[in-house]
Amino acid sequence: MVKYGFYYAAALLVGAGAVTYFTNWVWALPFYILAAFCLYFFRDPEREVPPGPVAVSPADGKVVVVKPENGGQRVSIFLNVFDVHVNRTPIPGRVVDVRYQEGQFLVASKEAASHSNEQNVITVEGPLGRIEFKQIAGLIARRIVCYKKPGDAVAAGERVGLIKFGSRVDIQFDPEWEIVVKVGERVSAGSSVIARKKQ
Image (cartoon, rainbow, N blue to C red; front, side, top):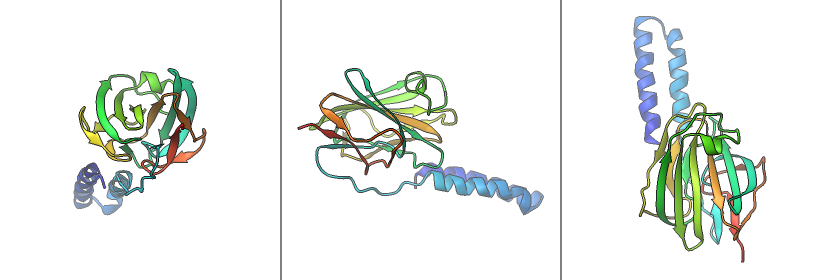
């Protein structure tokens, strides 16, 4: 469980208690439901990271884009409010850049969100090469959290941050990677292989 889930749930339960005290528990029911949802939303399950020269998904969600871009391939994953929102690094290595970019809050499933929305761009470089991926805010998500800074060493599938509520994660691959996912597939952060290093 991510700590934010406890904070939000606790605040909502305090509100529920106040409403129950001054009125009736029936009127507090929405607060209890929202508190339960926050605990569910901020879950953080353990994942088994597959070995080998592979890149794992940095996010849970649905693959909405696989397309050529910047001389390589871009994979975009859309996270709805029911997905786990903890983000993980696709490959092992060292964080060489973390760059925040202000932007809009378009619906994250739309293509324009990749370039126009508020986002945090993380670049990792290691034995398998260099990969850039973006934590992108959506229509509801207004808070991007990143735990890492330049110079930090990361293992494949290691937690690097989260995006609160609906959002999107884009991964930019160089030509030496073979994309193994298709549009419409669902993936899990840290455990689903999305690309393999070409031999």
